[in-house]
Image (cartoon, rainbow, N blue to C red; front, side, top):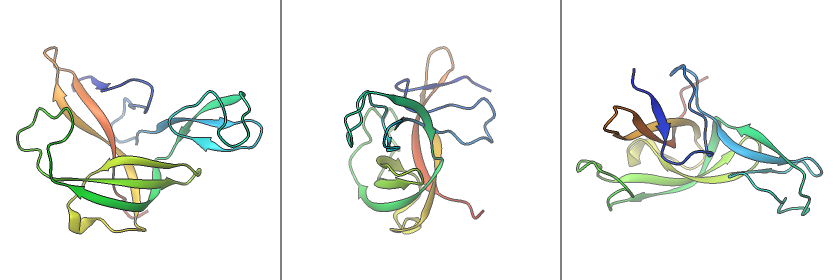
Length: 140
């Protein structure tokens, strides 16, 4: 299996076991308990600087979405086509914007979604460069 590396470090985990879902890397305020993504140094709610790094997700609810018909940023794939972008309410509280996988007909506001990784391209060394995205959740 090729090694997976993030397109930008510090935003999500990449589990060695591909059956384990990735998690977003966020912060939690030790004073008021508010969660944030991406990580912060100062709480936007109470302005305390004592925030703890925490893992968020991997499941949430699709708050809203749109479907984009222009090439994906940084995409090296000519067949990339249209893709969804949405806002997801994580169970811990923060709302995050992310790329969505699945066709327009597979997405609906209020549906459960789960974090996933998508390979953007392979490096000359054979590594997979990945981003996080949300996809319709499998029934649990």
